[in-house]
Image (cartoon, rainbow, N blue to C red; front, side, top):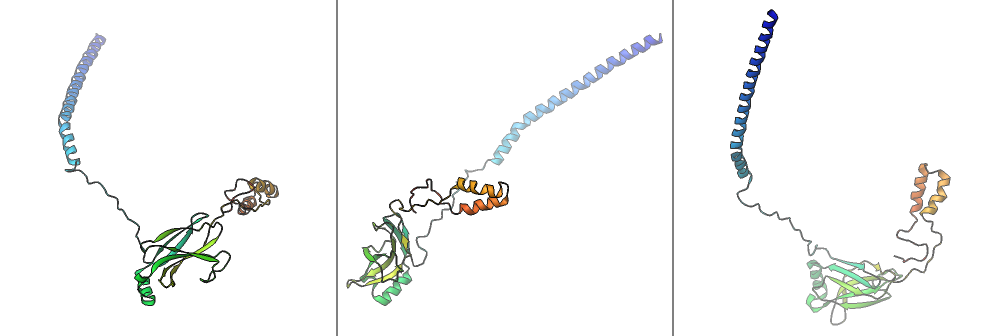
Length: 240
């Protein structure tokens, strides 16, 4: 009898527990659903508000990168000469107002003379301004500050004076350039059969020190200094 009573009591308690927790779960689910609906109702307003705050009232101005141009002049009297190829030179220069004023005070009015490039062939000599092998004069205009010069002479050394020439033939030097030598226009006539290439260096010294020796790397680096770069054949090659 007692056992039967306990069994019914357990069954009744279980039923009430299931009913109680089921009802509570339903209430929690309903509450959660209500909160989700409330959030969904408010969320569009929040999205719109945030979007309005983040969007600028007007379009952003386009960023302009600063543009710095090279100056046309540097306020330095100079004449620079470059070898463009075996037949052509290129010269550029700047004559300051101070240099012009000095010229006018010493030699006469600037306007009574005209600009000339005097190109000297100074191959094989130490040039002192008077001992050139030969020279040519090229008339230019007062607005020019650079000039391409056709010498037609490969493998020769040149120097250029920028000056003013007067009607009586006087030539007054304003600026003198550096000296340059034009490249050869043909293959070199020299042959050198004593060059040792990378493979030859490797074979000749690996037996002396061993590949793992630090002296091996040092010897490779030292001998590599004697190898001409850009040469693909031990025969003839252009001389630069």
